[in-house]
Image 1: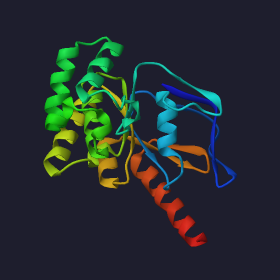
Image 2: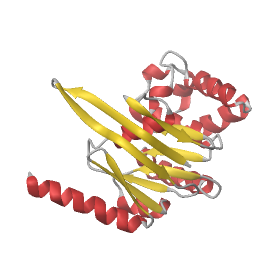
Image 3: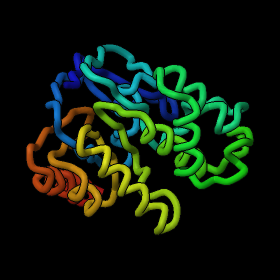
Image 4: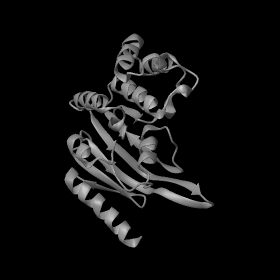
Amino acid sequence: MIRFEQLTKSFWVRGERKVVIDGLDMALPSGQSLALLGRNGAGKSTLLQMIAGTMRPDSGRVHYDGTISWPVGFGGSFHRDLTGAQNVRFIARIYGIDTDELVDFVEDFAEIGKHFYMPVRTYSSGMRSRLAFGASMGIHFDTYLVDEVTAVGDAAFRAKSRQVFMERMKSSSAIMVSHDMTQVEEFCDAGIVLSQGQLEYFDDVKTAIERHLEIIRQASGRA
C-alpha cells in the first residue's frame, strides 16, 4: 500500500509559486496496476518522483510497504560520468542482486550497443530510457513506477518492452503515466486522476479515463 500524508509540492515559475501537489491525503490500494492520469503540467512525473524518493516534497510524507522502483523512463538516477554498465553494476549492489546477471540482462535488453560501455552523459534521452527500463525490469519490485517508457524506440523494441512489462505484472503492480489510452487500458486495472493538486481514485480504469477526458474538455472550454 502507498499512503500520502499531507503531501505538498510546489515550484517557483516566473516569480510565482505554483502548487502541483496540495496537501494530498490518500491511500492507494495494493495489488492493482494504476493509471496516473492528468493534463500536461498537472504534476504526474513530480508525484512519481516523490513516491520513489528521488524528489523531496515541500511538506508531508509518502508511506509504503513492499519495494518500489525508481521512475522507469527517468534517467536522472544515473551517474553521468559512469558507463551504462558501471551504473547497472552499482544498482545491482544497492539492491543486493547478482551484478553479472543484471549487466547481461540490461545489455541484451537495452540494445544500445557499444554505448553500454560509454559514459551516460553521451547518451540520448532514448538511450537513457532504454537503460533505465532494462535495469528496472531486471530487478523484481512489488510496484513499478512507469513514465511513458514503453513509447521509447522502434516498433520491435516497444513490442519487447510491452512483453517483458506484462510478464512482470503477473506478480507485481504498477503506477503508469501514459498519454496512450489504449496502453492504459491494456496494462491498468484502475486509475487515479491528478487535477489541481488532488487525486481522484476510480476502481475502473475506463471511468478514470472518462474523468480525465472530461477535465481536459472543461479546461479547453475555459481557454
